[in-house]
Image (cartoon, rainbow, N blue to C red; front, side):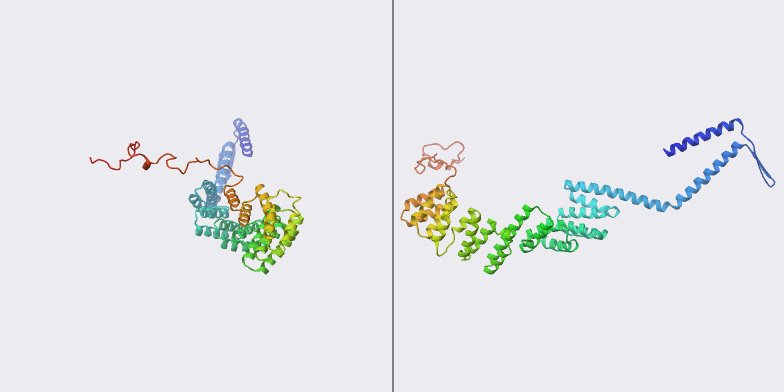
Length: 434
């Protein structure tokens, strides 16, 4: 707009001067020593304009000539940046299309001319990772570190992600340990550490990390609760497999109080106590837990306890019959406790009631063994048959009654009569010579 106004101004001024000079061209006399120059005013003005234009454009040309090396360098830089931007855009598109090799080449080719070489090298590292080229990936990570040392956190996070994705757990642990020292409050570092400890099965370090995950609200509370339960279950299992009663007790002592009433943890610990021969401690634990909340899993473990007073355990569990009369797990537990108390009739009644309410297959086994000891083998076989047939499931495929008789089904080729011709297409075993 400004240039247009200047053009119009020159046009107007030139038109005004043309009108004035067309009426009177004027006269100019220039004297210098013995020399005189005569000319019209219009010619003098034209010469002055030409002289000014020559000086102006000459000076501009000289300045541009002096600045030419700098201008050429700036042009090369602008063009390089444009090519780098285009290469990066095209490389990212090729990565999303699955052309990882060509994407890597494009991203690296103009990385040194890019305004953001860090992004080029990080994207190239991902492309190399997708090709399984770990050495090239690590070299791009090093170049990213060198081109922008201040972006250590971003580069190291990318490196840790790639190492985790490739199951390089030891290398990922080293990278995340470095990040934990550099950025101890970074939420994503904590989240990656959680993933790493889960993959490594490092439950002890994960147990130490969970309070910080909760304090910084890195994960959802429900997810953290499930993670905490899973972690302590794994620690209890490792302590039990170590065959160390003291270690098992310490593992249970490390469980937070708000988790000790969780049925999964409580059931695991009680089961380990029962398998370790500490049935009385398990019985006390289960009795207190069932008095607070009902759980079929805990009830089933209670039925496996072996103490010197099976009758007392049976009486304790029979108190729950009024509230849970149709619970098959409770009936199975009562049946087992009755067997330990040698109350055969009561055990038989509880086990039959359990089976009548679609109890677990273990009830059939317990009842079948009891009937064998009671010298009722036919009934025991019937119970085993019902267990194998899958009581309560779909009906078996119907079969013909005479399936075992000769030629009851469609006869095979070798069962056909001698005078009957072979079927169409069958081979003749004794062909005539041609």
